[in-house]
Image 1 (cartoon, rainbow, N blue to C red):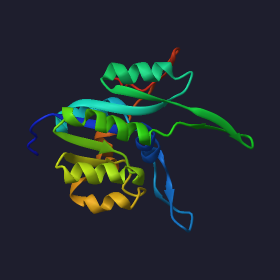
Image 2: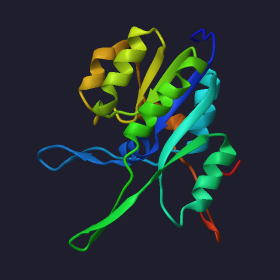
Image 3: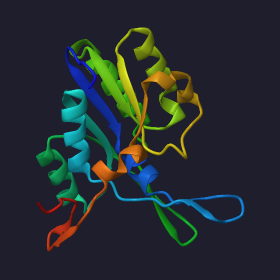
Length: 191
């Protein structure tokens, strides 16, 4: 077990995390090489608390009308949810909702910078390279948790000693049983 000292904060790109673990990956011949799965956000929160002694976990997410029960659930678990307004547009018949949280995650990490000793960044997006590089140079980077080992930007690979992969933790973090309630989708697992 790793020894942790000081205040640890986690900064999580929820869409990058969620979509990356769910993504099926096929090779050039069309054969499935990785079957995506559904992350249990409660288990992930507990993992961050238990493994890394995270004091605060900031979850960045686009706010979409109709998902209020999900947002309430994430807050009830203990995440500090930071919302990004979303834009909706059509690409032909397809409805696309855009809520890129990269700038918010970087900004809030720097706002909180004086309040933590170490940070964990949860994303496999190359847009966070400058943040990761800065935190590492300041000796304030604890880990970069990459959602999917098979599909992430090559930029964070420079920080190999900091990298942890969510799909390696599938047995601990996979959503096992979904309960459907009248109020909407509930991501909780049953005991």
